[in-house]
Image 1 (cartoon, rainbow, N blue to C red):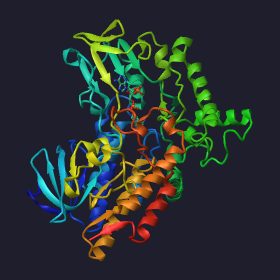
Image 2: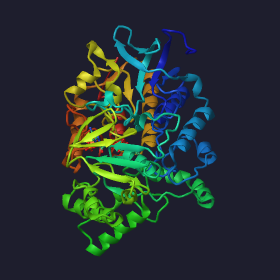
Image 3: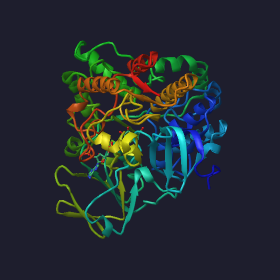
Image 4: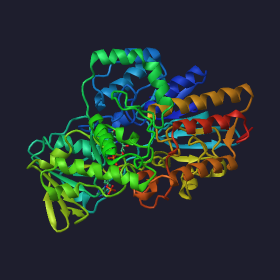
Length: 537
Ligand code: NAP
């Protein structure tokens, strides 16, 4: 049971104890605020608590995908691999929770069901599925950007007697797939990671692919202690580089350095190819930084796409299967998927690629799955079918601002926000890593946005202001800028979750700020320089 009594009033309620929520607790306390954090999971870590499927691993180097707010923490923590696996990242989240004594303000296994603004009292009323009702001056959604799973909905699934797994809700008890017939539905980053592992264990694995993904070897390796020590000595400089970079990762363990300065069309074929070869050898997300216009110009994009397809073909024994694994949409407009041994799985005799573009999933039966006219006999199915990205986690909570307007109803007409953190009609309500936030290293972004929000609250208190919300004009300007930037890129040129395309009925919107972090930070600075973009009371 919670240590706080019902109807307790707090300065701040935080929803979610992932990396954003944990830092927000710490930061809010530093600002002198009383705080309570509700978390649906029984542990901390958010994404890294829920996504415990075999093969789950980060694809930004850990020295960069980690908190920067504490110099001591940076020095104390040792990563074992260049790209850590889920258990290690979850351990890190737990270490942080203990190290900064955050647990006393976290209420676990508790889902916030509604948060309603009471205009007469100028506070939020927050209710949970465990019967809590608390009030708070500020309500912070740290609910994650890719955290609301799409529930599998397939005809006949209720009849299927085999085991069912969702990558993002993986059980603590490890399933055994040895000698068993398994299907994986979905070939995004989660599917790719789980397929690579299960292929080596299952008796028979069917990979059900609708849209192939562009892949690149992750090039993971154990951390060399000497290199780690060197890195620790240069942490301040690394963080500075990250903050000034477009996406918050700087390919720290490679000889390649962002930012790019040339168009892919400005260099000779040989030079371009050499650059791409270097990126593939470096691995991870390094192709994002190959040339200035990979995501802006279709001709440039196609040079990279064709190179990536060549790399796929070279690793697949059967040319027919190789073609099925080659994507045709503009590369990088859907998330690039770094992998380890993924493509080689299709050279194994126990792995079969089922191309859903040739014949779609018809229905589940008691013993399996019918694709086209063929029934695949199954002992287990793994759904790696994705998330309702950015808006999903908040849409699932009954959030009501002024005049009983729900956030879901507001966003049903089209996405709107100011600075990717707040919206008009929802006073003293902020989200972190949510709609219209930059496509950027999520841990560093959380730190920036939490600092921004806490500094704002400190200023408000100093000026005896109780309530703040953006003005419609300021919000409209930010939305326009976000959409203009998005429309200037190639993201709208494929169907992808960045535009909301993976959810039926979701309005097509640029869900992310694609203008890079430095330009985003500038918008935040300008907005706070005076209070003209906000209504305050
Ligand atoms: P995702 O990229 O959205 O992939 C979902 C997959 O499921 C797609 O291949 C999709 O096919 C397929 N799918 C969905 N509904 C289907 C249906 N009814 N029938 C057949 N196929 C269906 O989701 P994700 O793989 O979970 O990855 C989400 C994001 O999380 C990643 O892009 C990345 O940002 C993050 N992530 C990162 C890592 C990492 O750091 N290494 C690992 C995992 C996830 P269609 O595309 O045709 O719809």
